[in-house]
Length: 332
Image (cartoon, rainbow, N blue to C red; front, side, top):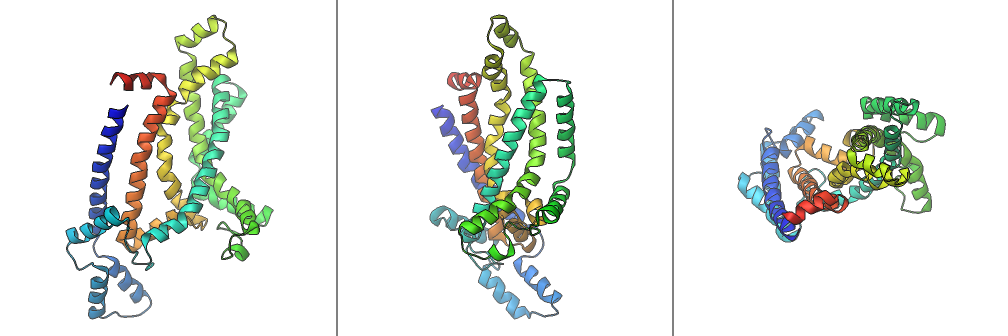
């Protein structure tokens, strides 16, 4: 296990270095830069920016420097000082911008995750144990519907339901009177009253998919010889199910649980845009559209780091959960 961790940590460093460079290359591939966005916005307002001012903007943002110089300046700041750079569009540090959105993104993602787990696992287990029953067909029907309906469409429907039947303001996580207010008990209650709509919207597709995965995996385990052997030895049915088939059917969940880490930051971008949620997804989308390269690069680097770390945590969690994987680590 120690050798495994050492190898993974070494490859993590190499992978993140490669990702940071490729990310910077991709950001610079489209024609133009942030000053192109500034010029386009000025022309839309009927203004004309002289060439001297454009040159000054390029010099101010360091866009007149060679590519490798720009990359070296950014990555050295990240590695040596933890400085993610300055956002061009917001004229703020990238760290403060991302930090202001992360808390609500994590809250929404964790709440949606708990919603998915609380519904999907019991229904998936029930569908497998009652295969071809009326409840199984009903759960399968809901699962297919949940996977087929686009999230943005469900978001629009839920916003209408919230406004029409619950009298809530459309979009956002706060009522207008609490949007810019300091945090207090009233603002917290207002947040919780608005949070259920995005939780349902984000969680429906994940719930539908996890129901299908749990059902299929458990059905595979229920027909294996060790289940018949345990049942023949007189092991109680509930103990047999929980100790062996259900445990083994959850192995794919542990193998992918680490992928949740980047999801906590990025969230559901399309849903956040449709519902005007102040999370990090719309911030990343706006940065890509305006070619705010330090903000985009920092986002991608953070998400990549969380993905790499999450994958390693998934491997460790799977080894802890599944003795077969743990034995393979020990032999290696």
